[in-house]
Image 1 (tube, rainbow, N blue to C red):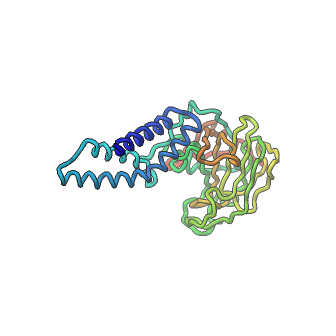
Image 2: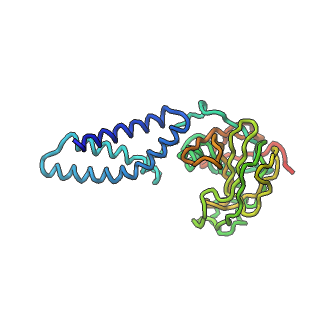
Length: 293
């Protein structure tokens, strides 16, 4: 009897989470997504136990519908764990057309940049679309890149000046974390050095991460315009090589956990037009509308 109640509870719990993810907008969907990922670890354990018990029942000739149902249920529960090893992944199901507000920012450099990762799909933006808070994030790089060199100066974007792509207010800065060698995992935090901006137009927030240590030029509380020099690109935080990470989110990043944060659509106004450039195999190159000074 207790076993039946447990299976019923797990069935209802998983159904509730998957329904929230696909049909409930906002924070409830975000929290449900992270709960699916977290519970998948327990799902692996329960799946292995259910397989073992199924084999035992088979050997004893006592196979039951309940055992078969357990295996199927716990396999579904453990499925999201495969995403950690790039199997069965799909983007967090937030619809670009229905998620608002969106924001169109200016190009954050005074020179051409390459979109390493960007866009709405898992094919062009794999590291970001799996995380609800970074759903439409970008990683910018410049030539040369992906060189596997250990010298940061060998990467084109390292030390490039970042200009504010929006008008807003700086709500937090941090630039005490050291820049790490490429292709290492010596980072102290995920984001490394960062700048958080409250956007005047939408009252939402822009996050810029992996900034060079001791290079930030703005202060908390400072009102900034488009083109205000912010900092230089570094290689701080969880990063394989120098790049600039940008994403747009609804909640204040100084007050809200990433697990209860909604990522919002982010477009870029540049010389080729207003759009959402994409990355990976066909990396888009974007150019500034004007040169910042």
